[in-house]
Image 1: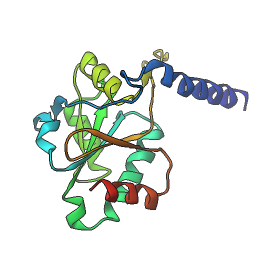
Image 2: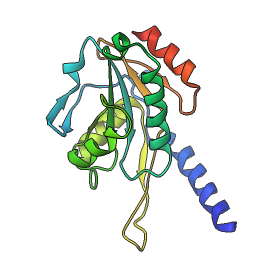
Image 3: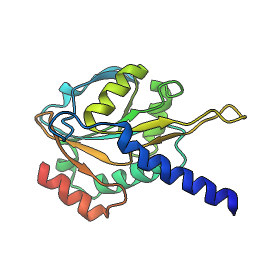
Image 4: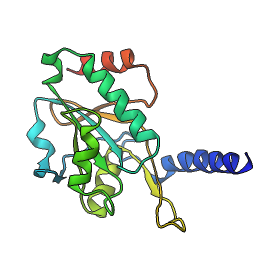
Length: 187
């Protein structure tokens, strides 16, 4: 029980520090940014999705809890929308673990959640720049004796408008109906 309490306190502290790790751009509000990252079928350019609403989530394949929960919620929200609405939305998972997440592993992982979800990765520098532009934070934890490690990261989903500008943030754990309403409003 003590070990669980220690882990929980460590996780809460890491989450609190994530905000400090990602300073907001000038003006105090993140603006988002265009990106070209590597996807399973080659380069993925966010500008190719102009005219669609993008749901951008920062996570990674080996995430034990926040990513599967968030991506399952995204699936529930998307499946509760009409086919016409879904056709106007592009969900994107940006890896915060480029050392382990390959385009192929991201394709396999994304397929568990929704057929239109695209997983992308890039260099550590590219990921850091994009995460900062969105106001997302992440911190790689020390490597464990077994060679594995965790990456603590922001849990929000970023709503990018049809014009390519950051339109809002969808909070982690919000009810599907609230998330769907926010997405419909932006459509």
